[in-house]
Every structure is written in structure tokens, then in C-alpha cells.
Length: 82
Image (cartoon, rainbow, N blue to C red):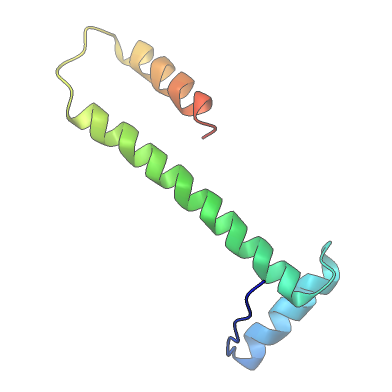
């Protein structure tokens, strides 16, 4: 595992330490790693949604009603885990 040193304000340091103690984390580093992983997942979901938006913007008019379009979109997003 690689090491990275990060400078934090005293308030941020206290926050990380408090969260690590009050949650399920063994160390502040575990808390920070979890935050990074959650951000990576969030970023991947945003990218997947952007692909869907780009596809929609590039498509022609739909023969479906707005209700049907929303149902299709929800099903596609659900299949992607969004």
C-alpha cells in the first residue's frame, strides 16, 4: 500500500478523528480510505448517467410518452446500478 501525507487544518483533523472513533473505523486512515472509495463509486455513477444523458440528447424524437420514457430510463439506470 502506498503512503500519502496530507496536511489538514486542526478542525479537519479533529473531524476525521472523531468520525473514525464514532463510526466503524479502526483508524482515521480507514475512514479516509472509505471516503475515497465512496467518491470513486459516486464518480463512476455520474459518468454512467452522463452517458445516458448524452445518448438521450443525441437521439431523435421519441414515439413513447413521457411516462414510458421515465420508466425506460429508470430501468436502464437500475440495470447500471444507479
